[in-house]
Every structure is written in C-alpha cells, then in structure tokens.
Length: 335
Image 1: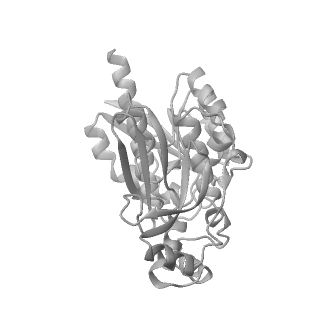
Image 2 (image 1 turned 45 degrees about the horizontal axis):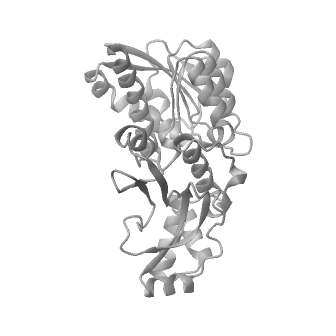
C-alpha cells in the first residue's frame, strides 16, 4: 500500500468538490494500492491541518475555513511547512500574472512535491518554467482539469495516442458560450436574453467577459499549444474573437444552411472565433458540453466530448491526474 499525503490549496467551488471526491473514492483508491490522505486544506483565511486526515464532514458545509482553521498559515507558507507528497492547487485563475497559483505551484515543485491543478493562469503565464521546475526536482505536474473539464484530452494525447503525430486540435472549450449559442439557436432569443438566463442558472458569472469574450478559451488554446505542441506561445499570440457579436439572425441562417455557429479554439492555428460547424459534426454539441477533435496521422480524427465545468466534474479530472502520477511512478520503478 502506497501512503500519499495530499495538501489542498484553494477552497472554492472546485476545492469543495475535491474534498468530496477524495472522501467518496478513498476505498476505491485503497483497492488500487493508494492510501490517499488529505492532511491539509488551505484558503485565504488559514489552514485546517490534520496529520491523520482532514474530517470532510466538518468542513464540507463551510464556505471558507475561517471558523475551522487550526493554523493561520496561508499559500506558500503552508505549502513549505506541511509535509505532503502532493499539492492540489485550485485557487482562482488569473491569466495576466498567474498569481497566487503560480507562486503556490513554484513553491510546491521546488520543494519536491507533485502538483495537480485546475488553475489555467500559471500554465498560461509560465508553463515552460513550471515544467522545468518539475523536471529539475524529479516530480510531476498534471493539469487535465485546466482544459475541457471532464473531457480526457491531454491524457488521451499523451498516453493513448502516443506514437501518433498530432496535426491539430480544434473544438468547443467553454460551456458557458456553448450554452448561450445553443439557446439563441433553439429559441431565437437575443444574446443579452440568453446571457441573463445563463447567469440566473449560475452557468455564467455576474461579469461574464472572461467567458463570452473568448479569454477562457484562448487560455486553454495556449495550454494545449505549449504542452502538446511544444510551441512556447503566450496569450497575446492568440487571435481572439468572442461571441458578443453573434446574432439570432446569423444563427438561424447558419442552421437553415446546415450549420451551427460555435466558439471554436484551434491549435496550432492559435485562433478563437465563432465558426460555422456542420450540424452533423461530432463537435457540434449543445448545451454546456465541450467537445474536441484531435487530428492524427495514424488514428484519423478522434473526437471527445464531456462536461466542461462543475465542482465534482473538475474534481474527477483532478482525481484521474493523482492516480496517473502514482501509476506512472510504479511502472517507472519496475523498469
């Protein structure tokens, strides 16, 4: 049995999902030979630390850790002080400077701890540096949850399609935009109406610009370009157009001619823009789904679809990355 001590940094929607999923799957993980113990949870108010495992029942009902913190340690201080094997970083994304997640990930990797994250910002800002830090310190950095939520895109390319030459990846990488465009197409309602509906449902933020202006999708394009195509590009290298200018009339005309209009991110073209997609295409999914087509030399076109967001869904991708790290290490040890 492999004992794995995990620290969680960030306790928002995704952080709550991580605590829930690790608790639910503890027995299944043990059956795989992995005894995963969540020994600390840190947010902006402090840290709950328990060497024998954090009591999920006590913290899952709390929005923050303010009333439960056993230590005032936060961020990098907690990462440095707590003796964990792996750090899960799920603080809010900032693709301008990557903080505070970038500092957290640098601290963890530098101290020889594996990192699993759903935080796009640090990878958009400093992927090459983080990758080198991981390599220099003999640890792994996994980030499946940063692109496409439950859609197994990065691992599919890196593991299942290994040996293939990947010519390109294009698809829908933002569920909020896809929902808005779907509603506009189905009901003929204007953009503002569909956006308001999405906000009422909690699918879109009060300030939806990050999604609807294509910023989120562009960040994912950068991550894919750098991690899978070794392109070393920045956010500013992506040509970005959002969905705010798409009209019900344009959507209706496209549908009449056998097309849907979707916000498509494209690598290695480095574009994000509303694009005509044939209605019969596997990537022409509706609602909040994400979908991506992977173009290869040996396997043809592989298409994957999955939920792009959600607390449990994102935590599912994080769990997969944790298992992947220790399965990979076990195989390495055999050889």
